Image (tube, rainbow, N blue to C red):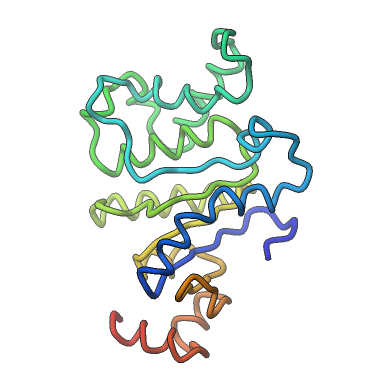
Amino acid sequence: LFGTVWGIYHAMMAISAEGAATLDKVAGPVGEALIMTAVGLAENARQVAAVMQHAPSDIGFTAREIVETGRLAHRPWYRPAGADDRAAVEAALAQVGLSDHINAEVSDLSGGQQRRVLIARALAGRPDMLIMDEPTAGVDVASQDVLAEVLHRLSGEGTTMLIVTHEMNFAQDVSQRVMMFDGGRVVEEGEPARIFNQPEHERTRAFLSSIL
């Protein structure tokens, strides 16, 4: 489906609850299927990174400490972080506009900033592809705009993103391709303008007419 064209980002949207459950299960298999040269879990982790919905905000971690965990696949567990790791962490936080909050506790950050910390953690591993689960869930409109700017910039830098979302406006704004799921299957796939304005599948038309 994706081939070897990097810098493209897809939005995956579930029409039904069953479809959403299927999306929750595909991140691992999709990552392994895309990376045909993978030689193990560590290699997969270096090439495909996942961005979860929630940061661990209640245990006193700083943004730096959270993002540093994105470097663990690049060294043996017993080796402390080196200069390259520290540089990758600082660069990742700069990419998402959080350099000024590098030593801030995650619990003190807004929801949108916490989401960007998670994206920075994934970027610190310098992956070829990011898989994001509902990156705008629980985030205010202003923070959604900032996230959209970050995703546009990452795409321009050659990062491929696979985004699972139920936010139709966000999907239209940031995606270059959209996939609609229903009952665990892709029922329609194409450019956002066509999917949202001229959907071909009956289930897609019914779903979009109910929410737009």
